[in-house]
Amino acid sequence: MAKIIAVANQKGGVGKTTTAVNLSACLAVKNRKVLLIDIDPQGNATSGLGIDKNTVKSSIYDVIINEIDIEDTLLPTKIKNLMVSPSNINLAGAEVELVSVISREMRLKMALENIEDKFDFILIDCPPSLGLLTVNSLTAANTILVPIQCEYYALEGLSQLMNTVKIVQKHLNRNLRVEGVVLTMFDARTNLSIQVVDEVKKYFGNKVYRTIIPRNVRLSEAPSYGLPIILYDEKSRGAECYMELAEEVIESSEQY
Ligand code: ADP
Ligand code: MG
Image 1 (cartoon, rainbow, N blue to C red):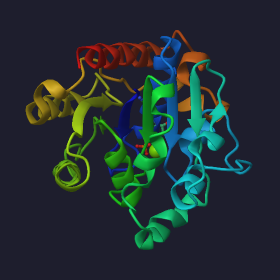
Image 2: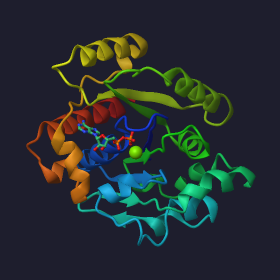
Image 3: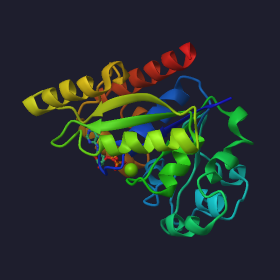
């Protein structure tokens, strides 16, 4: 059975997609069978893996709204062992369309039941909101992985996120746990980054990964080439750090 990890934080620009894409790719390089689900209407994980979201025929939208088999959406990537279930612009309407649908919070969970045993890890790149697409992701997931940017107001909104986790635990997914918190875009030259690390560690304790992702220009360039960092620049700090993060995720999953 796959471990299903929702990469979520309702703030935009904190490194969700960068983490979802690169952690998925690094897990796959480490010989795990990985599926990345892009459930953000912006489709950045899809395009970041070199897939043209405008030509995607069936997407996660069709899975959630039209109940097509998720297997029919899966596309290979340039990384062996890494498949993607892409997003496209139709998803922008899903949030509204879902409201009137039966089992609207459970659609993704139901869709994953048939393919769970084909993968070791399923990662879900969530949109920057706490709407029904994120709730579907948290309902389908075993764990939530929260990227936090080392910036002003880093902790803002996190109590709201954790509250959503509690509500999902109570009503939809009793077993949802926090996988971990990953600090992103760390800049060792600034006191601010160092302060944020301290604050986040106070709030989340041992849930914070040892690996801290630095601000690394190679990480921001890679998506425009449609490549995960490990193919774009294997020797970069960004690539090294996402490989280390993958190792931590594997370690904790084996203990589990
Ligand atoms: P989200 O999915 O949370 O909105 P993204 O992963 O898209 O966030 O990141 C927001 C922007 O920051 C993107 O342009 C991305 O390339 C850039 N970025 C993310 N992580 C890093 C990093 N560690 N170093 C440099 N740029 C980064
Ligand atoms: Mg994103």
